[in-house]
Length: 473
Image (cartoon, rainbow, N blue to C red; front, side, top):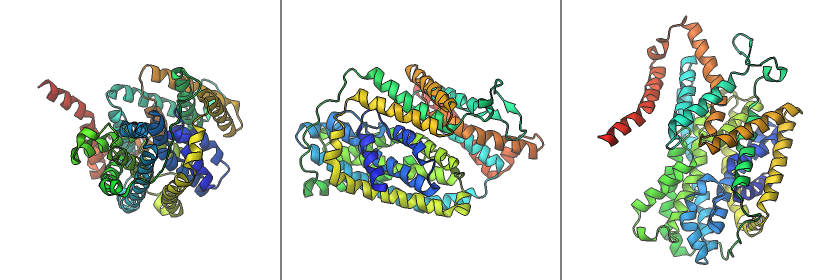
């Protein structure tokens, strides 16, 4: 199953319009009947392999299959045009493997330390931590902080629908028995990341099929080229791990920073953008290392590091597991499963890529319209399979259409899902804190850890204002 999941992830990542997030969203319903460890293994296999798969279409077609492959096409596509498509894919595959392994090692070293510190967290800290995640998410939406905050606020409102966990009173149900149980995260995730992407791809598609795929040739780059490129693997992996550990930073930021640093640290910058192998290796290493880095806030604090982590949190919750520091105490076997699955997925991606890459590339010749119809069908079946209810399908379609409208007016959709996940956590802990403190808000500044988190929130909120003043000055 692991090998099949890796092959499926590479295929889905390579198809333009099917991002890693979308791949996880449409495959999540398949894991409902599985054991928690097996379900997480399947999803992590698809996640890791789809990250590499996005570079295939970026190199061969100049169309990034995933947001993290946007920078890869700058030098990967020129290499393909020069008849070196196989070497470009080889550099991407090797860099992804190195970045993925180093990212998992960093996760295994850093996560237990953070989790041990997080064991001191109580309700005030968890409430502010959820707020910190939402603020960081809005801040990292480039050029649209207010739009990110608006999207997160919409998610917070949807998270309040259903029975109140503190009082048991139904809220915002409008007399509907369906809404009394709240809005399930899975139909929302499938709609926002699945149907929205389908509608976006169909509205932007002018042709029924993808451009012709160039010949691949040998996948093994020359030895001298590898000797010149290997430092880029390490620099990109370090960048990706560090940025991935920042909640909501995202792959687009990691690969852009890795590419910029690579141009600064290496000579011969004139070759970048014209088929420079280091321009492929550095962002691909960062993109894969980001996966391990993004798992750090997920397993230690229960905060999604990116939109893909948000889906993984939903999967853990569905199987009765609450991500956070207590998982290290109550379910250490799941932590080991996550570590092992990430490492195995990275190694299997390399093996499957070397053996089956030429076959996988042929799938990219399928018409775009056919692929979108198949993906829509998977979304429908997945949403219905949660509770065998057409109401979940309606919720999925509603949020899919809403997500599409939000993209048209340039409001990011990821903060909405994050708000839906973090909102109930923030509300429950905030109200519990105020009950225990008898309504006194001073408890947030009296506790050292909560005061530190509050200071960080204020600093992050003020950074754009300070930057604006500096630009005017």
